[in-house]
Image (cartoon, rainbow over all chains, first blue to last red; front, side, top):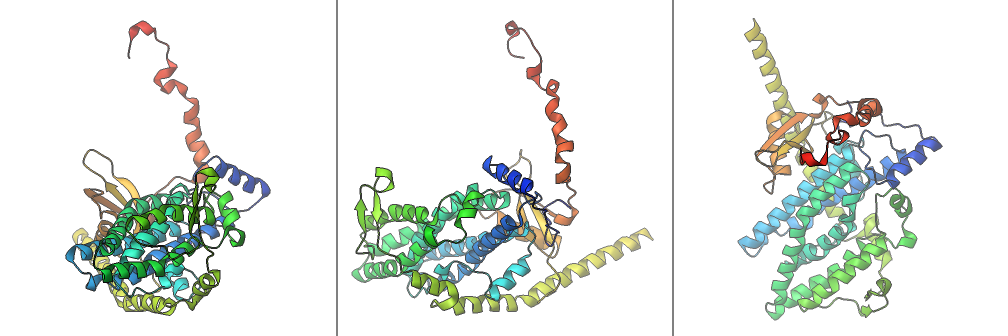
Length: 336
Length: 95
């Protein structure tokens, strides 16, 4: 009791006005909330939704890249890709553990993913038809994820913040290996450069969509900011990502697929920043709601992994039970 | 689907000799041996430590958060437990 083993624990809290005000005051003082602390049901629910979604994204995110492990063009690239995909699996596990401190079980979260009730990042519903996609994912998708995740290291919920510190430390290699891969292709033969440009063309807009709907259309943003789960709005983070990434593309001779992209001196309070074209939000919502090119494949792959692993989980539990029973009878015999 | 949940374990890692084992997170595993293996794979991919402890989460005895005030607040009043409470002439130098 009171440790982190809280799966299925009674988590009801009486939410009087005094309680809610005191909770908000703790948040405002930058105090961290820990698993056993009383918290409003909506705070708990928001975190379970967000951390669960984040964990699913890490796990589903292994699939598009896993597609290329056996076909990596050199041992160096293969080692890097294997390590990266293994990291994503690890990140999923850190995050499931963090969500479990809120009372939900991993099995429940998995069932919700497989039933289509829990979401994951819509970016993973795009296919990876060429090797350059692996570069584009590392550079752009991980780059966007890092932009989102760095502020989460200061999230008000302790276990989520701590998981994010580990994840951010590990992710920077992901982005660098992706950029290096793109750079190598961009410096290669005309065909290789074209492959890199084609991957950039396909991944740029979906990467911008990763930050979520515009602030004016985001349903969860305000309360999450107040609770210091989020520190920056979707549009603020998206702008930071654009400003950081456009010069990186220029440096390796690739062109952003956006005719409206231009430098604007007046942006960011006079510091300057890029104006960019309109995002196709219809496409975003279509993919979020299951209409992306790979939605069905991704869930089918997760369902297969879950079903095919069932006998392993059952056998491991049976083996543990057998060992426990043997140890118990040995202790009994020794006592006789 | 198994109805039984995989037990939960808390993982503690010692970064190097001379330091304490420190809580780093949790994992699920059916028994102690697999818990250690899983903890190694999940929490030490980058030389984070040279020793791992795992303990069943259910076996941890923890203090009641509702009693945090009565447990820990009294220490705040006992200023005489700190060196700065005692007045000593400056000429003594460092003590």
